[in-house]
Image (cartoon, rainbow, N blue to C red):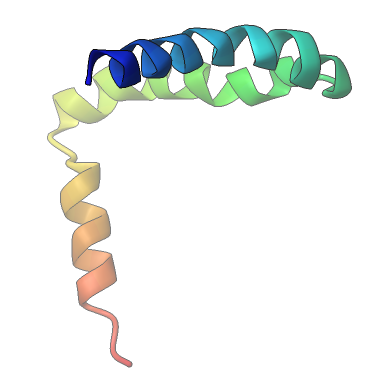
Length: 67
């Protein structure tokens, strides 16, 4: 059983290196995907202080729809 654990640890440690070496060179303008993080960081304190709960909002929206 320990051999399988060692293989799993090996595969998990290889994945980030595989992504950096073989996948990221094919992507362009990857910083574009980081822009929503800035919006979330700015809006989070505002939403928390105003009492808005996005989870409750989307769950109400999802379950209140008629089929």
